[in-house]
Amino acid sequence: MTPVTQSPPAQSAPAPASTPRTRWTTADLALFNDDSARYEIIDGDLFMSRQPDWHHQHTADRICAQLNEWSERSSLGIALTAPGIILSDWDNVVPDVIWISNERLRELVDEAGHLTGLPELVVEVLSYGGQNEDRDRKLKLKLYESRGVLEYWIADWRLKQIEVYRRDAGQLKFVSVFLPQDMLTSPLLPGFAVEVARLFPKAI
Image (tube, helix red, strand yellow):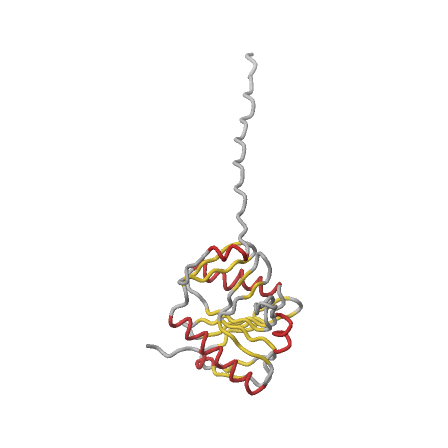
């Protein structure tokens, strides 16, 4: 009987060396001078988006106006659109709208006038497209959760609805979707109530 010889096992090709990850920093933003784009850094990853369109910006302005109307009555804080927030060398974001209490504002503004932490309430107007939606619904949700935001709203100007997340046991947990006919309230803002439809621009 002829002995059977076995071929040596095939050697697998060595895995290609992985490309080192580029980590962008806040200082790198000085390299960009394109005023038609908005740059943000989340965990060292750079995100570039065009300046908001009319529907997006008008929605942000209307939400900010409602929050400031309540703030004027309550004297508890202030709402702003598109503030730059420098959290660290690796995290630099520009939320569409924020509401911040007077006490927290005094704590977080540095000598140069920059916000160095996140406010109690953050609002993002949903930017359509896979990567944009993932950034608002996943990356920013995770970042805002880790940085102590108490409430997070995602405004969808096309559907005219607001997704609300609130802090519970250290996490930002989904609460509800508020539809155009609903009244939006918040335990964070005592006495604040607005019909959701009023937060969105009318069709043009």
